[in-house]
Image 1 (cartoon, rainbow over the protein chains, first blue to last red):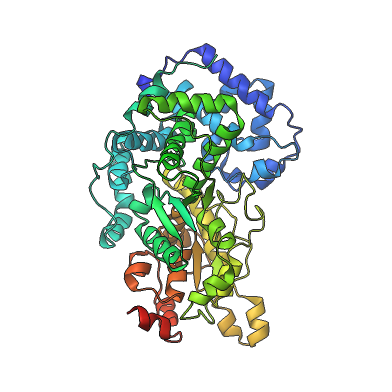
Image 2 (tube, rainbow over the protein chains, first blue to last red):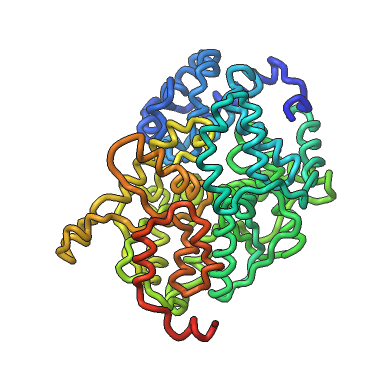
Length: 186
Length: 320
């Protein structure tokens, strides 16, 4: 899906980065976001630090560390931000940027989302069993399927695993093509 | 009450019991659901991390289909992620000329146009509390859930970022429903706490911390019960069941209990059901409409407590 995209240039990256900086420019470093974030404990640069680093021009470090991959989009930071900044949106925008700018380091994190969207493009509706199989293949980790085996067996027992349905197959291809070939925004 | 119904992918897959129980409960409440023809994925929690255009186009397609097939009807989504994606797209299209033009351009590939009018996107819980008064629910209860302690779990996406039908910090919208079912409400402040969402696939160790904290809070003693009943042992049993209104919350809380409880001390296995499964049980719906057997976390003590409730009275007999 990625390689059908409009070529990704450094110019585009700069523009996207600038848009993210604009989102957080009014940040006054109060730290409400970090204090509210349920995943801050697992981030190298928790939200407050992340915004500051971005504004100070340390984007390479930020994109390489990737704290935004630990965001679970609970929107608590955005809800409580006294400046009303769209912080959860900024996290998502950073993930989009990192996935394209640093595909190698972003790989492990982006793989699940990439596999997910590929499944949607092919089947129209998510086919969970096929999704997990493709995800295991994409991760190239022989132990990952074993980790999920007990859950897989329980779900099999409940009649929750089945082959992909072709009912909606290919329905979304035109939309995906359109989105991929629409070109960059002015 | 008539709605355009968007089940979403999960309800066709691992969350079949949610779909079946939603349809059955809504029918009981006199609502009519028109499933949106040819609906496709809304983009779930994945699309916003990858592609901004598809994050608008995927939900917009479903809104356009709903507008064409069921003009003017509100769109009912039981899944919280679908609800938020559909609502975000709908608000963008209604308020921004740019978003409307972009949606129109994306949908033109299929001969659809940007969904400009149409009904409002609404979550199941919004519809249950605002379109069906608690008395209407109570009227359908044939087996009151007396003495059953229920922990209402709301998750994130129906509460935030849009404040639509509940308090985003201290949610309480399920309480009138649970009270109408005759159940007691487990006092806790975890209702709006994140379950870890898709981190369960990408960073499981982090998501398990959240699931563990939620399960431990569910197992905590209910001080009110201890005081009222004076039975410390009974009060110490904590919640009998956590109810959810989102397939991802449900999956994280039910399927990963063992791993989350092993990671740290405290807590114990607890039953997790969709709100509509529990409503169905209280309404005396047939087992094939509540599908408790499909749920991955139903404890023996919950089953015996449910079986010990007063036998269904007249209305069920009529149905049978």
